[in-house]
Length: 119
Length: 290
Image 1 (cartoon, chains in turn yellow, blue):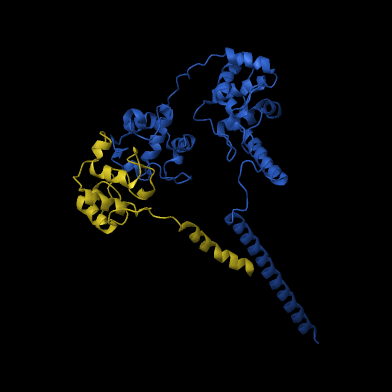
Image 2 (cartoon, each protein chain N blue to C red):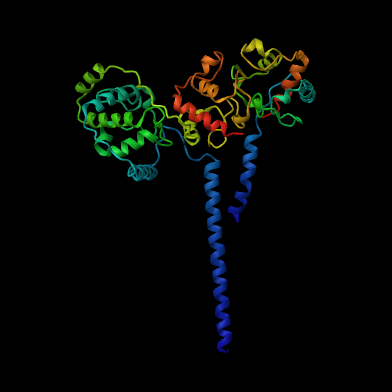
């Protein structure tokens, strides 16, 4: 019976092992960011988890984007770089198909805060 | 006591014994499963490359490896290996691609080949103890969990046979002879590849392992680290752009796979020397991902 109890514990140990990551401090508001994503229509080109209607196939999916090593294949993924990319993609990579949507600095921070919840 | 009641009693005792046996067996199996789970979970096994397996584990793994290779080598047809031109070409490939881990007569392996477990074998020894078919199979397919890569997307079968031919010659070379030969052998550009006209998606799937694509991308149909260095490739067949810069069609995908840094000089995706045929096959596989 001791064996059974140990097997029962195994999933608990797994969960305990995964939950210890610390989220980075982000200036934006993820709830406002999610609304901004809908307002700017990001979902017409990207799959974005938990954003209704965001199922575009023009650009890459943004699933687990917080874990992505590079943004757009060119930028090391940090919150600052993500804000820069969202606001002026053509300045980061002149060849990109992603348009400049005239995103305000505040909105870009909120959107980044939301995207960083996608792990 | 009638015969019938006695029979019933015996029957009851037999059933009870069987039940106990079954319960006991279940208990032992559960305890073993729990033990194995904990062994993995608590990280009991030391994976350090400098902590060699114990002798019994080492023997077991080596036997499994030997048996696996010799079973599969049976399917390999061995061509004649005696022509001198073969081992001449093989020497160049050997010097440029094998020495760093395996060394050569009188030539030390590079640092990358030193602290490995299992240790990359001395190939003069291998050439004396293995059949040409076994050596060919190991080079072509590589060996899991040993550090030996598969070379089939880098060398053609003919080139691998050249290496086998040279290894057999190497087993009887003195260090001085090897070094003189290696110094005189000129590097030669790879021969123009033969492209088939059709693309093979299943071969493309294998090629994505061969070029280490899964080190950076999640690819449906491939088992791997599920790393998000670059974007996941699920739905790639339906994606409108490649890398955010190229319209997604077959020609562009082949171009991107072969020379990403020419398409976008800023990209983190490196040129992996993908051959045209391999790129076509990979593109064919990616197109199936809707």
